[in-house]
Length: 506
Ligand SMILES: Nc1ncnc2c1ncn2[C@@H]1O[C@H](COP(=O)(O)OP(=O)(O)OP(=O)(O)O)[C@@H](O)[C@H]1O
Ligand SMILES: [Mg+2]
Image (cartoon, rainbow, N blue to C red; front, side, top):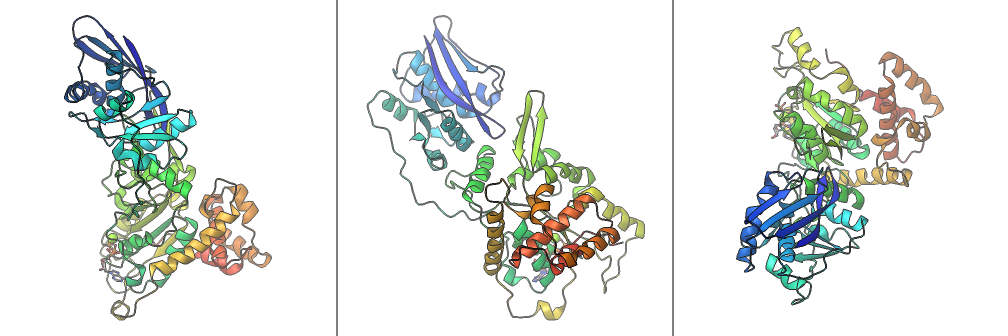
């Protein structure tokens, strides 16, 4: 007999309907899965067989063929276990139910229990879009699924419980919403700004960067506090809006990085990949394209510590996504696009020994070595950086000063207020912060007062700014003006923005 069950695949971040057809006919016992299954789907045969038996149903000793349609789409992962099992039970007439309006998702364990499955959020979102009435999911994922309102999701803990429901023996189990835990970011190393001594100008630069979503690079000798300050950046970022949070949660759900007890990512991500990261690890890709670090830091910060060590080829990969805010990965089967709207934070030493330009300790590197080191970061890459700030060594008096500086919470309040101004400005558009403005918006919103025009012209000529750098300076000045609640960009705002332009230290 033929049975048909609906399930869902993930391509990039989008769900796609997959029909699971199960045909059971007489003949030598066999169990075949067709329709471009990967190894995990092939292994579903063993899990399904054991799960059906251990749930006290009969595994039919017949010829079983499972087809996953559409046949040209590759199917990955263990989420087809449940639909295949239900298809077999329907096809062997152990269960009678109409599941034509229901989507089934879930990985089975050998004892018939249902396991946490990745990508639940985009799959439930898709079923809502396509108008399916019900989605059946593992109960471990109920909190994640509950983020999409307006869809009936029924959580089950095991195959036998689901069968009892389909047979009408038990009512649908209901998800009992529990008070969601506040998500604390996994950066245990984050320091409050209050504990960072001195470096007031760097703190100021980081505040501007966080307020407008601008890229920032810190340069300075070893032990001056660059890494410390970058990590503190995560404590002053504004919270995400609910749409942003849902977007980011989708990415983490698909990557399998969303623990089932954390339903919604509320804090902006802060990712700091090591410089040995591979191309695919950084920008995404692989046989089944997965989001890389740049997508995992979507709406948050991508922190590259020891920037030159990443090497020229890896950094060049970032150039296009830094402009486009998305990354498209093409494969023979088609292409997928992941969002990658991140704020870049970088930290670096000025030379291999770390002391080039230090007033007290002599640099032991040759001029050509310093030049080669700094050239690992190309001109086009630097052109995409808005804030370039030096972090000098900190002196004894400042370091031993007992007084605490301003707390991160206080700085974050100001950052929030500045972001709020930007959100009001961009209301009704896709933009969320000043750094995202395109030339059209720069023209509309970045009005420079008459008397500051000459300053802009002088900077353009003296620093030989590119058109991109020119726009970036204006966007940065817009953020600085927003901090002061000024509708027009005045000369001091512009002067501060220009002073942050990347320049050669040689
Ligand atoms: N401004 C500061 N206030 C308080 N502690 C500081 C400060 N700067 C540095 N430190 C101390 O020095 C340690 C090292 O700082 P950090 O790792 O940020 O240096 P770095 O600039 O990243 O050095 P490197 O270039 O070697 O990576 C910190 O963990 C902290 O204990
Ligand atoms: Mg460091």
